[in-house]
Length: 515
Image 1 (cartoon, rainbow, N blue to C red):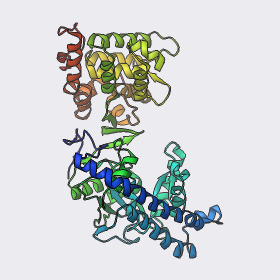
Image 2: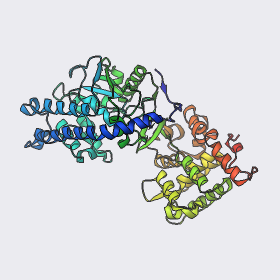
Image 3: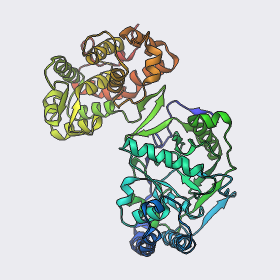
Image 4: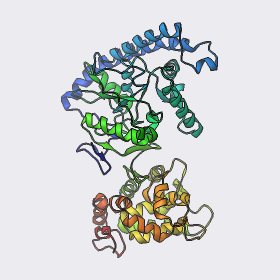
């Protein structure tokens, strides 16, 4: 099945990171009636089984030295405690309404496939797949180890723990995974969700290479929930975790199907190229599921699609900014004025002129309330302040208030702070991040295509972005999205009562590519 690297959306959702449980009136009434009884009963039973397993899970590694903990447990700690925790885990999910787990195919043994790769990853209920997999070891975030019960179960599992914020932790996790997968049966079988985050199952997002770095055979495992109501999915946007629990436990039962596909043995080329290996397994599993294989990924809790190494946000910060400006009563000309104020401040050269906090954004953007400024700040930054160049360039690119050539000229001068007439790779990363509205971590490919003798000039960058088949798509599909925001700007015009905006202002005609 071919990879879908263009814009993908279903009639229900714009991308795979959104899901909401949709109920008819009758289903809502039934949910309230059943949920008022089943939810507290089932949650109490599940909590009881997990609490029973808590001290037993801690007992497994109790009294062992750090060196002993770094090896797989054996003896009574395995043959006695492992089946007890397995039974208690299955009982907890049984109490939540997962009465049956339908199995298709045959799970490969450890020697055939040291790792099981499971997709799609729908939510926290997916950990039920560990029961038919006999509690295979997993990879988990460091934050989960501090959670009651969950932390004890991860310790029992001897999971590989990784801190996503710590580069050294990520390196160590990669080393640990490779050692375990190449241990020739010394370590138990592993189970990984290569998507790395949850989706609505309408497509497979790009697989992370972690499970494929060791170059060992993998067994693809498909996870399906064939129910009338799709209640188990917990995604970036939409249904909350509490709603997932309520809706799932309010059903009489919830079906789950685990399908083991044949073991995938990598070629020599795939062994030497984990990304290729991951992509090929993703396509295989997508084909078996009957869904597209996409280049969507989650980067820093922001859903993006990948194109030529660049990250294109699926939920454009600039589009949301325009919506907030519109809600604050700003029309097309007011947006232009706000952009002028921002660029004038950035060009002033004063210390700290390119950054602003929420309080400073209010007068700069002409907002009527601080809440909108806080939201806009949060769209571009996790800090208390935001780089004004990001807001200016991404909003200007989306609104097409100036030609792309003029916009790139402005961007180049803003990031060529020393006036060298050329940019380094780091400066290019910042520039593209400002144009696209999200940080860019992989611009090496673009830099290689655009630079000449180690120098990247404005003309070189403009040439590649307007003529290179890959990067031209970034321009035409993202930086010139006239149809995407046209309705917003039409509303702004109507609100202004002015259909003849000044030349260079925001108008549908300005979306046309400049000659």
